[in-house]
Image (cartoon, rainbow, N blue to C red; front, top):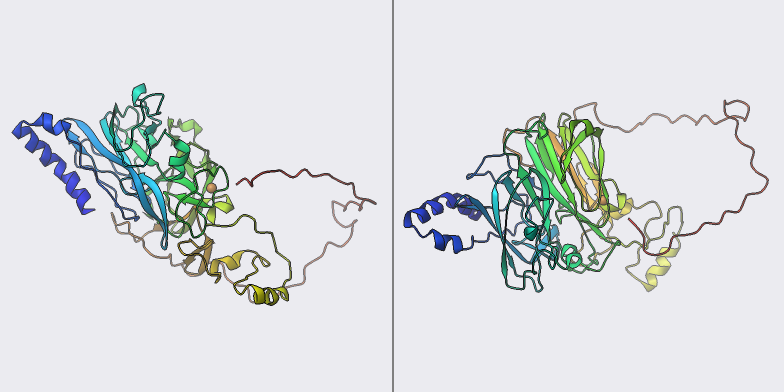
Length: 470
Ligand SMILES: [Cu+2]
């Protein structure tokens, strides 16, 4: 942080000094110092102190890349490199990313900015950067082999274009794309509008994250890169719950959340307690007539969505992908459904041969939340995260929107758990339970029960082949 501020703050002074000494050609030739960030925590928004002003975004468990102004051009320096990403406390992965992290830092500019991005390749193979969604000259689009030669190992390329339209974008390699994205290479890009627009709301909080998926075997550290569908880690900005920070807002804040999907499946992103409107995508702001209230929005592969709401209900509201497998961490997918199977006599016998043997799932999977089976080292527990009332039984793509009345202006630190006002929480019924009223006879109700057929028709079911889809 300090270094970042130093760099950003130093930008204006350095420029002044350069101009005074008339060595601008040398300065132009010099690369901006790359800024690295190794902390996986959510860094405070990076307020601009040069160029046009805007309200900066918050990158969940990430950070925004500082720039320098060089004769009217915003200059950034991305370094593509192997990184160690802490995906959750106690669980690290060997990934590829940018400037010390996967995903890379968020890049924020203003509509009309001339942007120059230096990309240095410290990976063991060539790479390139595609600026997803941008209007730009064809030669800057970053598809290696098509628009440019790939950036060789140890080489630095320069991309330069004008950020022509405001919106929600991302960047990722377009060279050995499958491997490099499976290893975590991607980043967010936000272009703020130059002037107020009727289609672009001013908001108090503006959160960004990318959806990503990895296949890391329990106990391993490196993602498998050939996986097509059977991923076992579903993450936001390469973090899994409870390693994903909460979204802290004040009661009455206007909130925008921007999401990009760089996994190989769709994600219905779902918010509790509020309705939101999808206000735009990587294609730009949506017309007002296309905005309908929703509580879940499906984000397809390669798509981006931004949605907005008024945070007017205090509380701790779950915010997650609605595919229930995506709110679990490293899991085996070959577990049979054992609900209802009574194996009480079986376990002690099996444990004689296999002392660590555990049967699971015979009463549902909730036991997994506080499972005491030893996990391989460096593995995220499958369902974890503890709330004020016990295990949340979630992992993966899950976080919490925390809406608070008493959050001080400008202070968005985690306020802790919500205190339920008396009489506003579900409670246990301790009175007597009446006998269920049973449906009496066929003639009593408006819809008589159908007679049981004398024999059942045989139905042939064709089971799908191949790997399980998520
Ligand atoms: Cu999902």
